[in-house]
Image (tube, rainbow, N blue to C red; front, side, top):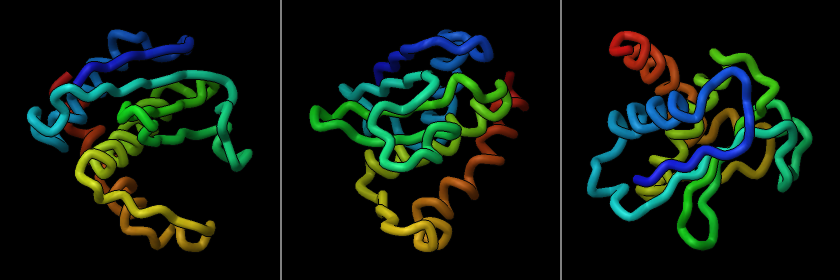
Amino acid sequence: MKIQVVGKTKNLSKKECKEISKFFLGLLVEKKETKGKTLCIEFGKKFAYAYDTAVEGEAYAYESIDGTYCIWISSKLEREKQIEVLAHEIVHIKQFIRNEYVEANTEEEYWFNPSEIEAYGRTPGLIASYNKHF
């Protein structure tokens, strides 16, 4: 999978962001599933397409029309939180790749949504694995 990192953050270098993303993806999907695909990770102060102002301080993952997978992460977050958010959103990228993602329509549905339960559940393990290896 080709990984592009755009925008600026003082907390994570583009090289490190790519390294972490490749590591997380390697734990979640097979290489053949990502062949020919692109992941764009954007750091910024405000997500341009946010339907919810809460997104401004966290992250958002989606699959664009051309099949590029995109993650937006707030550049305002501390380094550890950016890595945590990256892990969470990469779980959603895995779900998009495998057509497993389930959209939540309300805040209440969000917390009981299988996609969110998986992402929140896998995040600590992804981070622990990364910290153990690097």
